Image 1 (cartoon, helix red, strand yellow):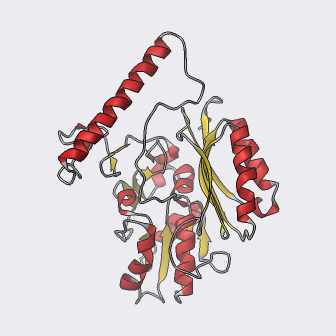
Image 2 (cartoon, rainbow, N blue to C red):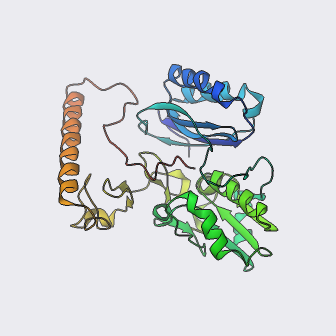
Image 3 (cartoon, helix red, strand yellow):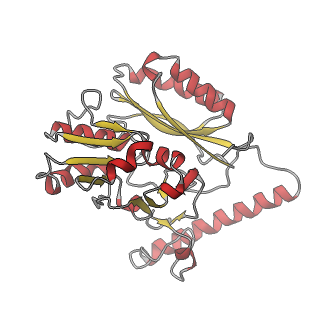
Length: 329
């Protein structure tokens, strides 16, 4: 699919590489993003870089060129998709202990990882009946889509994944274990964890689900459902087309199109999953917040009708609830 040349480019990127000077890199990268009118968040840690950014084609290219001017970032994994409006409000470069938080000391993909499997070879691997297929993502992500036959670890955050391994995979150290995540970073770190624990045959999907959905024809796909993404698109489907999901502000879970018609779904307030878990004070507070957002949208619409269009790429005012404070791929 050829994108509209005016479309916003969304670039999800990461690289595990040793960065002993990562703190020094923060300000120059931030300045380059601001100068290029690129929004989103990049995470820097001693183990590498991770994040998702969005902007014009020219802006994204300039940021990527700046990063790749440092030889350590030359092989940074980048996956691009497209949308009509910038799906982020802020421009941030944050310093972290880990670029994806596993919470286990001594797990470094720069030392050892599993075997990379390209999207074109993934079906052959997971069709092997001897392969144990593990989804390394969180419960709210798995809820809207996963691969056929995949095991759901039922984790609420990536920090819980090591406990799942200890409880449920301890007897599988001689088995073939294949893992996947959204963009590749979590399954790459997960393979490092399993290798550290003595697993012998560990595989992971290069480029993650996003690369698979981009490259695999839907008629040949083993993916079922949609793929959650950490921006205002909420979810994408085959070909990385934006899917019909919204986020519930009450609980942060994605809500599919049928559930959006449920009487217990109130935009910006609650969904059928959390309607009985919120207090009346919370519902009232969320409803007032949504009223203010709707009022802002109405004023934006009036501005457009008067041919006083907002600046190109300016997103409508909308807030996405955080998912356990994580920035993941």
